[in-house]
Image 1 (spheres, rainbow, N blue to C red):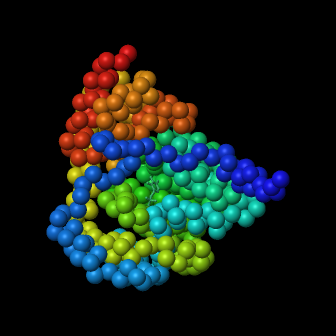
Image 2: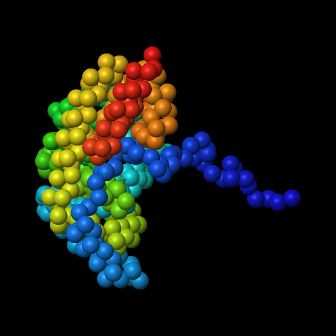
Image 3: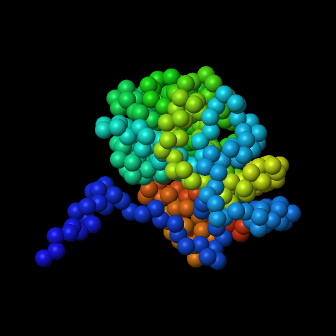
Length: 361
Ligand SMILES: *Cc1c(COP(=O)(O)O)cnc(C)c1O
């Protein structure tokens, strides 16, 4: 008789209870489900990147401090010298570092619902208690509920995405500042969609010692590279830095990100194209009576439509992949989320949706 245990005797129960983060297969699909930038880099820039690859010392570990890349980020994102930068393998990894760092017994990680699902998932990985405060029906912050939850749970950390995913809206900045002032813990503002919004809380960093800000290159056109960053005071980042695995940002990510950041005009032009497509899609979708559109400052649009799951399936049959949020949260009943793609992709989506909306009751 063997005396070793089954996985379910060894693995933590909350991990056994999880279902893995599901990424649907997308080969041959018009892929409008993951907030990717649909545009490739210009070929001259791609050739420069190819040359970087040829010349790279792959046999060596990457620069553990990524000093050169950080300098480029500082310049491109206009980050003050007063603030430190921590780099992650995507901002997901930064969320994980923060959650692990603050996960004392009984500590709470607080966010809103619906929000980016990784806040809750990573809280589970890091063994920290998660509290999700519901947004209002129109997805604004419920300040009273937030203040009550802060008083009750005394969260070590609060995560707020600005603009929010999956809803697309910017929360009211004054309300966020009230929350920052009310909590004794840290507040992480996740600005993954900054390029598509005309707002940022980066200028508030100097004023609030418990405020930290996250950005990522993923939604800007470099999702495949995996690079996220946290900006904040040295007093906080020096501790998170100790938990960062030494070579978490690989050599190609460092070199390519630095190269592309020396051409930020390219990324910003693409973001502008996405924003103007977003406006066009709003106009078109607004003509479909059954659809309720929610405002977006991101590169995606959330909408409500009767029989959303059926609509989602019909789009999928036509090789158009968006995100079905129906059933993921009570406030998202019959909601679908579409990423803004190329003009051609968006036109195909809009036409297909229009036809489906006319067919279904
Ligand atoms: C997509 C997304 C991220 C993930 O960014 P990566 O840098 O690709 O890990 C983080 N936060 C929010 C709110 C997102 O929507």
